[in-house]
Length: 393
Image 1 (tube, one colour):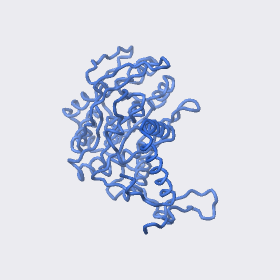
Image 2 (image 1 turned 90 degrees about the horizontal axis):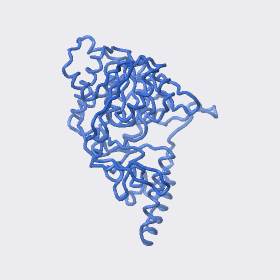
Image 3 (image 1 turned 45 degrees about the vertical axis):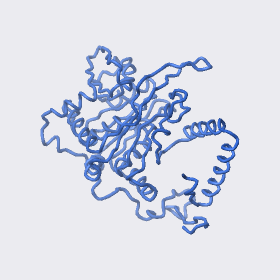
Image 4 (image 1 turned 90 degrees about the vertical axis):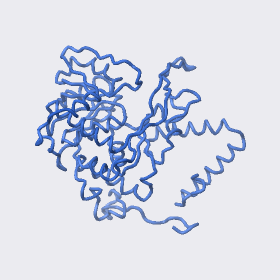
């Protein structure tokens, strides 16, 4: 791009030029849509081994340890839980690859085999994707439910999918206990560690003798399990169902959408084809906080893992300094992680905008004026297709 000139390159065109309502597609793939990132990746089972081979000692998944949780009363009388958080700690692709192998073996030790279903009902956290990769590796179908769903919707999804194994966070076990009498197919509940590491584990009793297994125990069981080699070598094919993704249920009971391996591979391929020209895979960081039970976040996190980009996990409650889960004076995840990449939705953008404006308004007149000048200049440049390297700093 020439300095001072607007960027007028045509980026997309109609797939059917004569059709007014035609979908638009990027010019680079207008005639030949990309469906795979490379010749070695056919299914989601191929991604962890490929990434480990290329980035064994690079850092991948990271999270902030919750050191304490305090109740704080707001001016309106509401009680918000405030998290005292540590720094981000990351694991390498080598460590995650080994964990995927052992958790996968642990799942197989529960008499699962190619095509069987397991259900994940949890907030977004790295253990979610870790377990998903373990399931994909052996051709297990992943059923997903939003962690915000009510008990009727959870019960409906579990019963309709007829799963025997539910994977959840420790904090959500109580919801599953409340409906355990009405989800009689469930035999195992595998739970992620408590978000507060010092919290003692208290597991409920259920009438139908559900067995509770921690993810750490499942991983240990898998490392010691004797699994038939033919079963271990079974892998899915492109047309196998990878995910049954239940909707948010905004118009009634949630609906399960069947998504094949080739669909998710195509989705993340489209994302990586746009990202490669904009990112530095060696240094850039992605912040993961949207629901993994939504296809956009799932494809994006898989794409980051494939590219070897470090991912730091967050939540809408801890994203900014002003988020509801952050104690006054403490730093939100964006400030600590300082990511280069994030995907978002309008509601989150509104929160970020509000947090920024509040911080700007707390500064002196000179800083407020400088911010507005820089902001307005950047917007005008972006509208003309120009980059702003100095303002980006």
